[in-house]
Length: 181
Length: 241
Image (cartoon, rainbow over all chains, first blue to last red; front, side):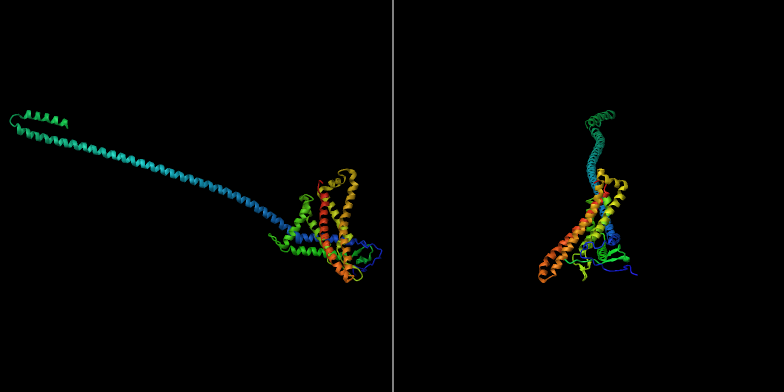
């Protein structure tokens, strides 16, 4: 048995209300039920996923922005760090140059000083040697002169002087000569 | 204009269980159109929206804007689906009667805008108003909801009740009136246009214009229905207004 027990189309009178021929409240019920079903279906199959995706995208964008912000901060920090390192390196290089300059000048001074010292020392040794040579020469000379003079004197005054007086005279003479030297 | 009739049947032969089959058909068709269009538009959704997804997202954003212009997003976020379903259903229902109307030889109308039936529009309005009350109680508590009838002065309570009734009636009747008038004039123009060749030529342009206007009215009424739903909702769920 069909649910439409007597399915017939009712023809109203001409005077009947043209807008509402019959109070078909079941239509309204049907519409509301269908509306609820439509809402649920749309939510499940169309707008639920869409709104989910929109939310996801919003979150994604927010994440991206915050991560970009973080990256920027990180980069800035690194940049500052790099800048600091460069500054440090520059300062160090300057220091090294300064040090080497100082060291080289010091070394030059040292070399100069040591050279001077060496020269002094050489001069001194030379002087000492000269002095020694001189003394030696004087001594040798003195000896030679004494022998020579003895020889000369003995030849001149061989017979006039005795041995003792002769020696005394020679010594005196030699002393005089020696003091003059 | 010749009178036309609706295909009304009685369930179980009971006079009180009248069903307008045209309404049932058109409700089903409208909702099926809404569902399938949205369903296929939402087939491929991705992080980077393209074509159809953009359109749906634009619609969602549009509804969100309507809601946020009326209430806090904290409360409003529950009504996005309601707003979407209302605007889509009412829009498609309004559009359904524009391209053509189908009637049988003995003037039984099968195809028309379902929103040109006052029972359907008013029941939709009743649903909206009932929902506003339900959410008003749910979101603010029965006490706050009840107190609202006596604000700002107790003697306004009857007027508040009247306001609810008037809101229901105007919400439903506005939609019905617009769409019904559109359909009536459309039928008249079509009847005129098909009466003779000469009238067919003269009535052609007005029919086009009226159809365009029908599209405009239909869209506008869908928007207004959705907007007013949110306005009434805001009245009930917002703490201050």
